[in-house]
Amino acid sequence: MSLRPIIETRKSQPTLEGAGVKLHRAFGFGDPSELDPFLLFDDFRNERPEDYAAGFPWHPHRGIETITYVLSGQVAHGDSLGNEGTLGAGDVQWMTAGSGILHQEMPSGNAAGQMHGFQLWANLPSSLKMSAPRYQDVKGANIPEIIDDDGTRVKVIIGSFWGKTGPVDGIAADPQYLDIFVPAGVKKTFAIDTYRRAFAYVFEGAGAFVDASAPQGVLLEKEYGGQELNIRDLSGNRSLIRFGTGDEITVQAGREGVRFLLISGAPIQEPVAWHGPIVMNTQEELRQAMADLRNGSFIKPAH
Image 1 (cartoon, helix red, strand yellow):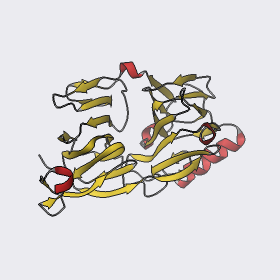
Image 2: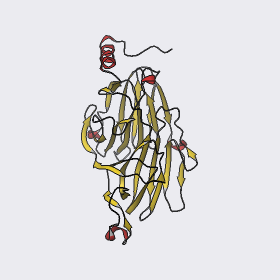
Image 3: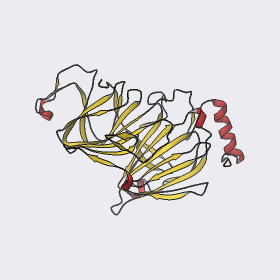
Image 4: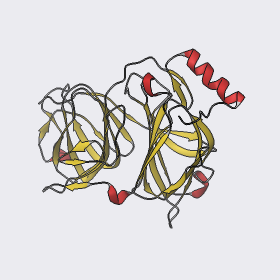
């Protein structure tokens, strides 16, 4: 087994999106090869309804998939094909935009006004960019959770892990999407397929991700009781950790434990022509998508 090096650790940045929703963006609209097949990751977390109530009114998508995971509050959604529904706490939606849809997402808080969720965009290969749109709406109760002997908890949203398989299937990038909690003081190693690009996103507590490329024997005596680890830094709330090549990662949880998403997928390695929520392979395809929007032919008939 080979430990993955840490390429980069960075904080997500405050961003306004939709009709004025305040959120934090971990990555997006940068170099699409960095985390191929993933294009964008947003953390929408607020406790004041005025910071999210305007939501994400009608907008188009083509050539990508969007993955929405709600932790608290609700997200009501609807689209131009007549689909509609509501995601509650713990629910997941994997939407394949394919050839194109117009849709909206309108968040609302829980009884305390809190709203928290994540949205990830995954690219589609050229062979599937004009495929028929589809939804996979998954209730939180149907997402398997594994509890290890040391108290580590893993929700398997997508992919297979520790003998459990998540309910979302048939995804081009063959991704793995895990919600992981490691208790205080526990050091834990997680396997990742060598051929996948991978990142972690910390959203509760803090932990140190062991870096295979760091000098050996870095001592964090105060936090870890003198245990020697090759650690680059301590990652806390809203931290993105981007990993290099290898087949496992190791994290040492801090004094409050650490909860993070561990996401990986097979790179598509195709050209990207990108304008907002429309991602194609060539500028000509992008121009055609914009022309379709203008002339009313963006939504393609079902075959």
